[in-house]
Amino acid sequence: MHHFKYHQGILQAEAVPVPRIAEAVGTPFYLYSLATLEHHYQAFDQAFGRVPHLTCFALKANPNLAVLRIFARMGAGADIVSGGELYRALKAGIAPERIVYSGVGKKTEEIEFALKKKIFMLNVESPEEMRLIDQVAGRLKKKAPVAIRVNPDIDAKTHPYISTGLKKNKFGINIRESLEEYRLARDLPHVQIKGVDCHIGSQLLLTGPFLEAVEKLKKLVTALEALGLTISVLDLGGGLGITYHEEEPPRPREYARAIIQALGRESRTIILEPGRVLVGNAGILVTKVLYVKRGEEKNFIIVDAGMNDLLRPSLYGSFHGLLPVAKKKAPAIQADVVGPICESGDFLAKDRTLPLPQAGDLLAVMSAGAYGFSMSSNYNARPRAAEVLSRGREFDIIRKRETYADLVALERIPAFLRGKPKERNL
Ligand SMILES: *Cc1c(COP(=O)(O)O)cnc(C)c1O
Image (tube, rainbow, N blue to C red):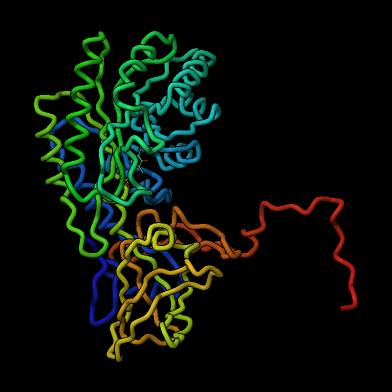
């Protein structure tokens, strides 16, 4: 469900015609719909009904402050994976007691930051990290609330780059070895064990793997309680998939129902860490056609957004729908839609059939709200795109387009290199 629809042949975000925004902010830009974001959060959160739960939005999918504020206002927590994400979450007004911290490579300063801010829980991914957290907490005269992120060795049946719950993945502690690790952690003076955690992958299209994970966590909890540990929280991670093309992921309601059923008479607080499902289809990337280049073997539609703006097609071979912002009657062309970056891997879509565009036409890259802007870069010295939020008939710029000056703002030519290069004869 989303609010990007045609009205009299023109694509609108809620009630704002997309070309109006393009005129005001230039291209490319990310465009998110407030109504869609709110609807997605509500549908997800309410699916768990009265089960005691906390929905912690996984920031890495879309960490824009305005997006975070929208969720914060609705009571969301946050799943963070870095000190920078903690900073963003707090800045957006997400309460620290609603923040969980995941990630395999937390640094000392980041752990300190999290403990000082009194976040809800750190999800620990290795025995060494557990020791470091204990030390840091000791220094701060605190007790660190922790869960162990266990790796349940479950095949999430998704892209290998976004599968995280297999033995061969770098994430978590093997579930069988975790029992011993919990036992050791129990004796550390400055950690307080709160729960168990897992996150098995992203863009999951079946409930099966989630249920397998719940079963394995439940068994683990039973074993932990036999050791005398109190486990008050089950963190089930994120990973629910969305429709990019023809996928039919479980709806939040089905996903929740399956999980609730698998939990049985569990009364512990559950934590959910949805990312993509909240924001993916709530955002599009709007780009302008620069050239149409016909080749002997292939045609190319060259647009002003590239892999630096939206990396997913290049990185994972992901499919994103493409729509002309203004519907037109034109002969169809089959083409690759590519960006201006000097890499053959720079494409947004391959072998698509579209009404033949002209230079200046706008295209909407659909389902770009998750892992879109957040994975963007300045590669090829390209200022990053603007981000815009639509709200009924209005829109707001929620991140300005970067300027050339922004590109070099942090760079410095050392003194010994100062002075303009001398003129030379060629
Ligand atoms: C990325 C991530 C998520 C969110 O994943 P989605 O597929 O976007 O829902 C949740 N938890 C952890 C630990 C993650 O790394």
